[in-house]
Image (cartoon, rainbow, N blue to C red):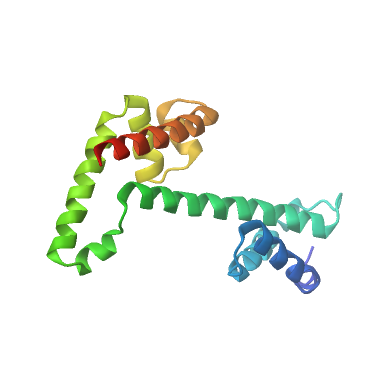
Length: 166
């Protein structure tokens, strides 16, 4: 399969993929994701066995990219949830804001310390260190489903603890 073939597919299907991402992700800033579909298609063109149409193959790639994008955004939200403020704004804030940021972090660290060990482990690895589910599962010697479930429960427990402290 040649790169020109994928270039033809780009002209045929890029608008469809753009609309797919817009509806799937709820954002119109998805041009980079459309390009990523075709970059991956070029890299994986040997795996296309023509058992399906090029359009379905490209949409399959797009779906995986969309899922990755959602996970990336969720990691950002988790980190924001955990830290409440970015480190970048730390350096530009007034002394009062820096003090408040430090107090918030102290409360967060206290809240994390109150969690049971398994929750604490998964919050630190997934939420703070931003490791993937599979990496976390390997480190903790757990199944991936247990990592997902424990992380979800840990975030709920952390939220409850934060509310209790405030």
